[in-house]
Length: 116
Length: 111
Image 1 (cartoon, each protein chain N blue to C red):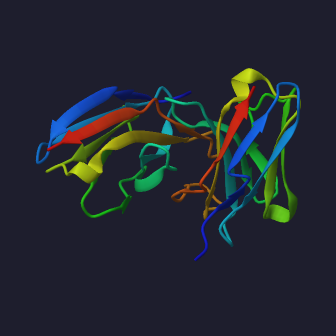
Image 2 (image 1 turned 90 degrees about the vertical axis):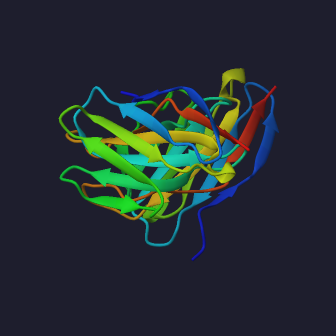
């Protein structure tokens, strides 16, 4: 089966510019996650979708970050405006489970964002 | 809410064993374990569910103490390919499947 797809793979922008990342999860996976991973740290959950709904966005900086999952499939994560501290790898993952008890997460290759 | 892992780093020789611990302050429904190699995405290793059910690779074992909100990952007869950073991930029991990765443990296996 096809894995989680992400694009772009790399992006370099200047601070105060905007950027958007796209994720296509594995077909049939109800749960989709966006993580921010700063070099040397573990992935930090930004937002978790279950089908169309948001399960958790408590760590999403809502003044500059936004995310949507259209029709419960593809998702986009946007940063507007970007700051230097947003430089990180943005990982998208998906999992099958829609109810209590998460199944394993499958990760995409990530997008490496550099803000200058 | 981020679970804490110990040790932060460990170096092993091939064939040696290691234990990685994960501790949460919240009541848990499940604990997941992932391994991430440098420059790559995390790869699933194991899930341990409240009640004792487990799902994962045959060569990896782990335990989950529900009362203490703790889990341990046991790596036996380590191989060079085991090198990487290990993360636990926890799903909370009461707050809608919220999921958080731990602080990470760097494992290096040397010949």
